[in-house]
Length: 350
Figure 1 (cartoon, rainbow, N blue to C red):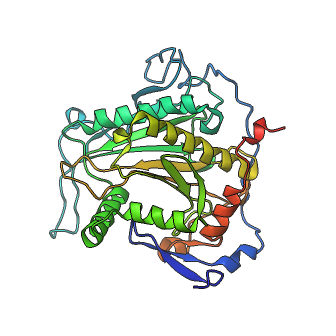
Figure 2 (figure 1 turned 30 degrees about the vertical axis):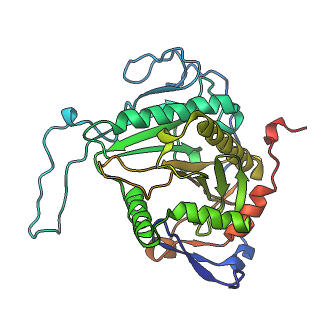
Figure 3 (figure 1 turned 90 degrees about the vertical axis):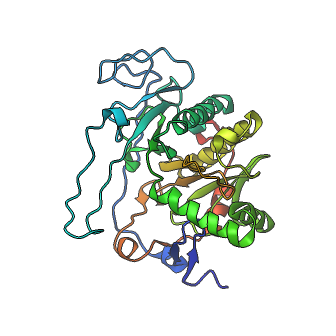
């Protein structure tokens, strides 16, 4: 097939399609440009409610933590059952048209490091391993609660992604139902497993390793690639090389490799436009819904918004909101650009 012409690609994890229009990459840009001036952040900020020893808005004082620090979100989007007063009442005049139900859960914040000015690519692999182990421990703890069916770990990096707090951190939302995206991935992986009697992402990774055109980085336990069906310009999918359902089932060697691949990916992101590269990143693993999930294969998504430079952002508007997602840069071109970037962070070169 000619990938230089307009075509569409299917995402087997969700069943959704993306329109690819490579010729549009040459069009001039007269739209919005983002500000790229980065603040010179201090190692410690006395006004930051995430820094060690500081007082948060609810009056609690952070410990003098030395690695990671996790705590219940002070402005949680979800509350546990003992904090919920009653359930929403349906106002339906016809069955099925006005559905609502109670949703309980827990939200946590995980600070990566006591240092206010260091994001993932600037941490050591050992420091990132502390983050990875915290994610795994919190996932197990939250998933064990009877009212939790899914645990979503995610990071929003950069103001352009809506992050209001520069101190590097991630969040964990544990929900009483399986959210839309992992629910769809569960369904599609289950259908594939039932039809092919094999794991979708195991088969996909093998095919990507055979071609290698979309692979960005790899180590013994993980592979980072631009997925064939990528929507965002420099989207990356990180896949465990061996079949396992989630992060907690990974041993320490595998978790260290996960920390290493996270560092590799985020260094390449920062090096692309020599800026602290914004993104939303999330881990996807099997639900905690009391069902067996042999179909589930642990992976992580990186969704970065930058398109042509540090100041040009990809927008999801118009046809993409009303029809289907569209991209100009092919996955193969994006992977080549990322793959060829240096492995040393631009701040530390020379």
